[in-house]
Length: 254
Ligand code: PEP
Image (tube, rainbow, N blue to C red):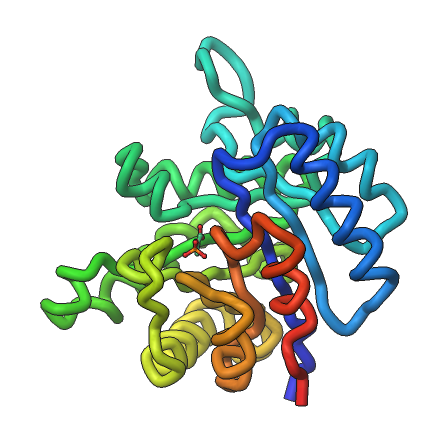
């Protein structure tokens, strides 16, 4: 079976100022050291990427953007292109986060274009997918997650799949304290891997890392990570302090 390195990603959203972000980055740099058994990335607000990427230069902790524009340049006031993120020191970008989809009305079409922009700019991409509570209650979880995945990946070729990570984030679990149970996460993650195998072949699906996101914290991370198809976590609230994010990075691998 393919070894998939666990990947812990901290999505800071619109939190932490320059001073707080630099202090957290310094602690992460210190505590992560040069360990290679787990991959770590932070996703600060775009205006701080440059400074944080410099602060983390030489450390395995990588820096990414939380979103990018679906266009490459032009009259798009307020937007930031994937190439600009890369130019500022970002190595990754999150695309299709539920707050983008459901607060800002981002469509599958836009998400697919953003994935393409990220790859074209040389960034690794975390594609977020996940159902709303009413979709879960209506028995639509599999259909929603499969649709968001196939649409999100539709402009990606096989050779690029190694630069993709999928994050399964049930919307009802994000920022709510209601984590999906290991069984709920496992069911969706294994279905997702099977689905990607159908799209791109078993080999690519076996190598694909699928993160879980939704109220991950130091107390529940080990149980979630023990689920065979859970390969890491996309963490919001608990990534904002070293006190919570470090134990997540250091989850019990046993
Ligand atoms: C997220 O923002 O992707 C997220 C999962 O947030 P939280 O961990 O706070 O639920």
